[in-house]
Amino acid sequence: MTIFEDLRASHEIQRALARTMTHGRASVENRRAAYLALAHELDAHATAEERHFYVPLLMDDAGLSVSRHALADHRKAEQLVEQLRGVDPATDRFVELAKQLSVEVRDHLDEEEHGTFQLAGKLLSKTRQQQLAREYRTEYAERIGRYAM
Image (tube, rainbow, N blue to C red; front, side):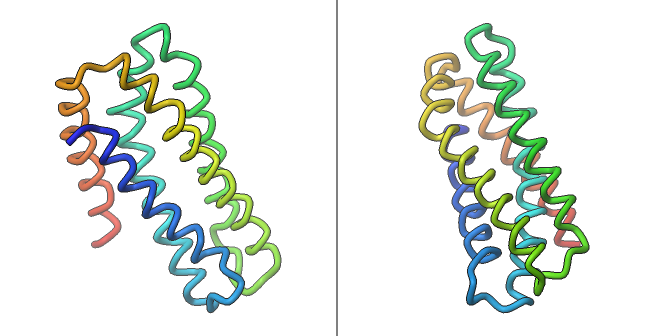
């Protein structure tokens, strides 16, 4: 497996949680649970992705701009996660912020999958892509495991 397959697997989790968090018919408890799960998923994913995908891309001049943009997207998502922390999922404020987070996450994932991955595929050898996948999986599992405790 390459890094791209691992990242896409996490992306699908993020999309599903964002849908649940913003679904108008979801119960307050389901929205709260989806928010918490998404916050954990985004933290584990972003940390591992930054270290084992974007740092290697930053080492190549051709990867600088796209990496910087992605890191800025991660910060925006982190800020929205923090704004949502403690907001009652039954309120309009939660719905508003959850929708903003959902849009930010979906846009970022689409940019990665339809642009960044193609560039990275040219910059990183298959061997390097496989190595990064192993490193990403290890870091991701460690981080996500912290939330299970």
